[in-house]
Length: 81
Image 1: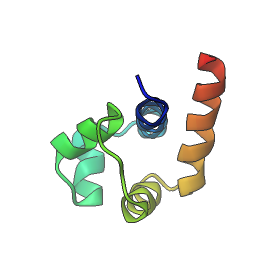
Image 2: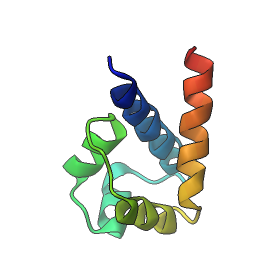
Image 3: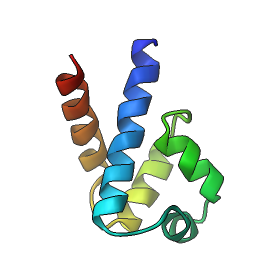
């Protein structure tokens, strides 16, 4: 797996972990963010490279900052080494 691909996987895991902490389903967050559930699932699996606008939207829907996703993804990356 390439480093970029792995970083996307960690970012997706970070987004999913915040969503789960807020006790939202994929459908709940997708509806709030005005995206399809399938797109969100693809993102959480690390198969989609989100643009900054999407990260901002998701962060707003989850009442957090976009940097939260990046910090968590970096933490996951460090633990994986």
